[in-house]
Image 1 (tube, rainbow, N blue to C red):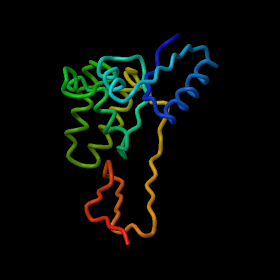
Image 2 (image 1 turned 60 degrees about the vertical axis):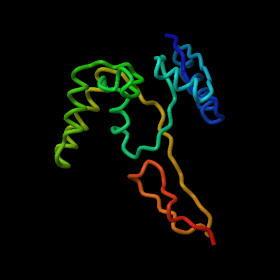
Image 3 (image 1 turned 90 degrees about the vertical axis):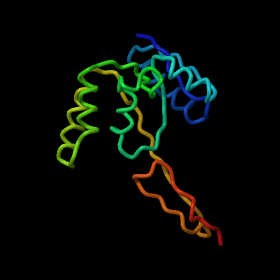
Length: 158
């Protein structure tokens, strides 16, 4: 099996790409790592590529996965980088997005994860952690796990 792994030309991604390439080589896969500047990278993803490394800060992976495998996101309406067009997954996403309480959300999430695993439009192999730090003279800095990115509206330095 051989395929291309598309990455952004950033130090960490290049190092990670090399590790993934070496580990998959050990089990008989020929991975060609291709590093691109940010603009070219995203153009490659929207145009279709075999595989990619993408770092995101969503605290709930299922939320971002729905973007990457939802055929409703095709035709320029969203990323759907997996080029998935699987009606069962789309129905599972709709159940997930339409959940009215925690019980429905948990059931829909579990069902959607199984559908994705069974149909293999996306196989996550790496999950990076995000760390937020600041110095003691930074005040008003609030990070909450449900924000994609921190707000700096009320941040000030002493």
